[in-house]
Amino acid sequence: MRKNRFTFFLLILLGFQTGGLKAQNSQVEISNLIRSLIEKDSPESDQRVAGQHLFSAVVIKEFYSDRLFMPTWSEGGVLPEIAYEMRYEIQQVQFDGLNPMDYHLSAVNALFDKYEKSKKAIETFELFDYAALDVLLSDAYMIISTHLYLGKVNPGNLKSQWNIHRSAPEINIGERLVHAIENQSIRKSFESLYPTFTIYKKMRDGLRFMYDHEKKFNAKYIGSWKKLKIDKSIKLGDSNNQINEIKSRLVFWGFLDPNSLSEDKVYDSIMEPGIKKLQKRHGLEPDGIIGQGTVFALNQSPSDLIATAKVNMERLRWLPSDLKEQELILVNTANFQLDFISKRDTLLSSKVIVGKSYHATPQFNADMSYIVFSPNWTVPVSITRSEIIPAIKKNPNYLASKNMSVINNSGEQVDPGSIDWQKVNPRKFPYTIRQGPGAQNSLGLVKFMFPNRYSVYIHDTPSRSLFAREDRALSHGCIRLENPAELAKLLLSFDAQWTEGKIAESMRLKKEKVVNLDRKIPVVIFYLTYWTDSVGNEFYRQDIYNRDNEILKALGEERKS
Image 1 (cartoon, one colour):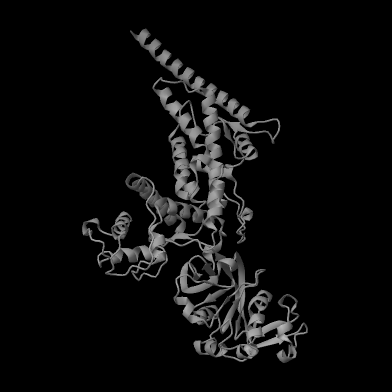
Image 2 (cartoon, rainbow, N blue to C red; image 1 turned 90 degrees about the vertical axis):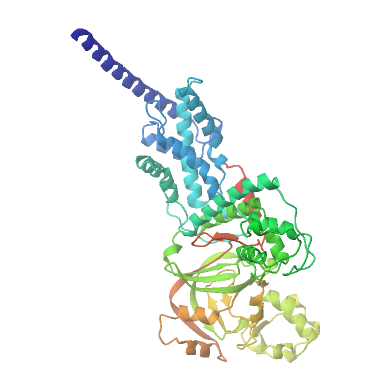
């Protein structure tokens, strides 16, 4: 009996040793297979694993070389939980506005499916399959990390120029992957690469919410709904044949209680709050009047808003990563708004007027360094040719009425009466037109300077009524500010002598007054047509400059190695 027991324990011990040896040999074989998959005679050769292009032959080879080509995502013939987490995170990148198929998802799913079947003895999961899956998961981690950190699209390749410069510190993706595996957290590793703006995670939640709505939409509306059209605005109490369809859409978005619906075609007071909520989401005046802008918003399907969200999450990834800690002036031209931010607090929000579609305000960043009170306005050559000279030909007193003078190349004034304006060729006009300080000055009473190659700056305007308009794409490219005195007060708060009274006085001088700031303040002029606030409310804006489609198309293109 004792001998039999000894033999039994000996067999168990030998079995364990044999199993351990087998597992060890398997790991070595998988290691050799990984090496054969990623080592090529020529770095330019086409690197494919399971039919998938690898992101970077150099990066993947360095990563596996450092670990002697040992597998990352399996051990002893078992795929651990971290491998499943990695597959899950590939699927989750859709909520970052990225395409999971760019990250080997089809091939990864096929291999996981084969592995699951092997556990039921339906198929055999070969050592080569372990090696292929290992390389694809590692490569997917590397591509996703790069795209979350820098974006998938290179903004430098866009027709709509993006000149917001970003200095992004290099990251060692291989080290990050090792750290993520050691800490058993792929999610935290990816989150650490998100844009530093806190709204990004809320925007991500908003996109997830919109995908849920897309599923409901496709089930109820079979992926489309009829475009609404109106000839004139619909006001409270008006009847219209499209009212019931409008009600249905408000219910779909959760802006109207379905239990409060009636069958009549009258725009009633029960419906009005839902219209106002929709208007607020889309940057319209929440007046409850169903005009063309509101109809445009009503026609936006979940798929349309998903596309908008994708584009803007990509834009956020292009912004400088160090902005969050700085004093900062942000101008979102799509929202016609300027925000002055300090230590993450918004000290001022103000309406702005931006460039017309054919004079689109560019996207760039620069440092604000000084203010000019009671400024002169040197009229740009293009405006002199197209607007000023034709106006003078019609009205000889035009220059005097606008407090404008003619300046020669030496900076001296020229008597306008000495010029035969009817014979002037606008394209060969040898002078400069300058408008003096005053209430009529096109720059208003103050301008804020951040030298840049576009000659774009922020300034006051005498045309105050234009701020009441919803569409404020009305300028030649510069940014007109509704509350310039408030911005001046914040910028000059470092010096106690700059009281409200002194600022008001400086804005009414007969001669320019230049005031240097005690620090340089970053100004970012950018274009965001989707974002969320700190509590997750979503906001969408019309693509006034038609910049979104180019980015959307680039995001949808097949990733190139």
